[in-house]
Image 1 (cartoon, rainbow, N blue to C red):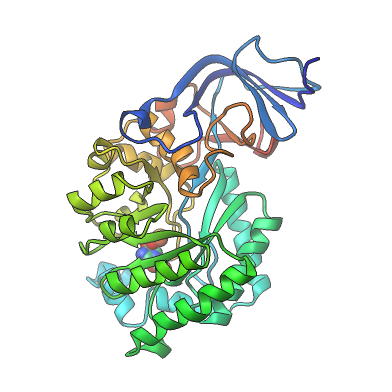
Image 2 (image 1 turned 180 degrees about the horizontal axis):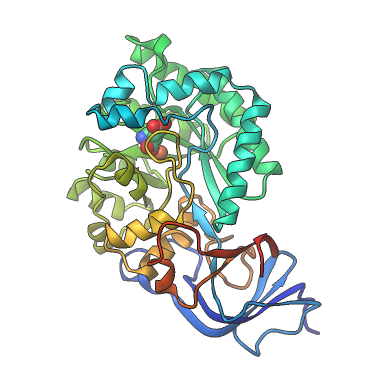
Amino acid sequence: MSAQIDLKLKNIGLLATPYGGRAKGGRDQGAISFVPDAEVGISGGRFFYAGPRGGCPGAAREIDCGGRLLTPGLVDAHTHLVFGGWRHGEMARRLSGDSYLDILKSGGGIIETVRRTREAGEEELFEKGLALLAEMLSQGTTTAECKSGYGLSLSAEMKQLRVMERLAREGPLDLALTFMGAHALPLEYAGDRAGYVSLVCDEMIPAVAEAGLARFCDVFCETGAFSLEESARVLRAGREHGLLCKAHVDEIDAMGGAEMAAEAGCVSAEHLVRASDEGIRALASSDAVACLLPTTSFCLDKDYARARDMIAAGLPVAICTDFNPGSSPCLNLQFPMYLACLKYRMTPAEALTAVTLNGAAALGLCAETGSVEAGKRADAVLWEARDLDYIFYRFGGSLARATIKNGEVVAGNI
Ligand code: NIG
Ligand code: FE
């Protein structure tokens, strides 16, 4: 007896998708599957069939995709989605010569967003987050990560995490939650770095783990933020409380952060603009995914990470927005996809894997999502395009025609 197919997407001009249940590095990163003239069957919110026309049983509902391109739903594995206020005033300061770290040192930057996030009510943060999630969905993102780190006190971090958890429960995307209390030193701890690191390790991490509010623990390892030793201590405390580790490393200064992240057993290492050859090798021989953030380089007008060297070393690369109010106020993953080709010299096929399967792997979700394959969550994007190259060419807007989440068309129209 054939299975009950709830929805059939027919007349797909091209299905382009990575495949499998693990991160892809090296040559495998660009080895994706292309099925022309395809169809996809969905049952119970999951893909039941994905392949050539004629292979899928009939369904109660059928949608004609008009010969367009279908890919997996996009996975944005690095965002700072929940925060109070914005920081558009920093643009003028940066234009007059202040660097990102100068602004942070003078009480602006992350510290300014901390002030605004502490002032904001939970409902206000929730409503703002919900509107941002709707925007992401309309641009093709179906799964995202979301970090705390704009509270920097036990109560304000817990407030931010509760909002994130409610967005995960009630919002339209799947969200993976990350605790990032070690994002900056709050003003009230100026001069007492050790005291703040102890607060993060001995009070915040146990409370977050106890409340089950996060799956990951992240740290900003950087000049002006946390040292290698402090970062390693935070990640160790996270692990001891059952959290998986991530780390922002080697973004602005080369600190040996990539080596530290590999040593700490991180599931992903973020930024990596100044990562050393040794650091890249260390990450490649660990299980980590490199989460690269080209819109941050673009926005700060800085150098770009060495994605080609990472791919050559066999390190799986994910591309994410790093959406935040300071260094990357860009929610649309399609722009970093474009920069991945232009600036990282990745091929469209490698970049597609980077924003789907490898993004999912950075969140421990690649058995669930990241490819259009029988058994995975039915998350997909139908593009206003006929082939893959086109969506890496028409930059600046959104080419997502419709987004399908758990087997439902949730944004756009077909
Ligand atoms: O990943 N680098 C640290 N954190 C963010 C920036 C946060 C902010 O500027 O508000 C990042 O770029
Ligand atoms: Fe970040």
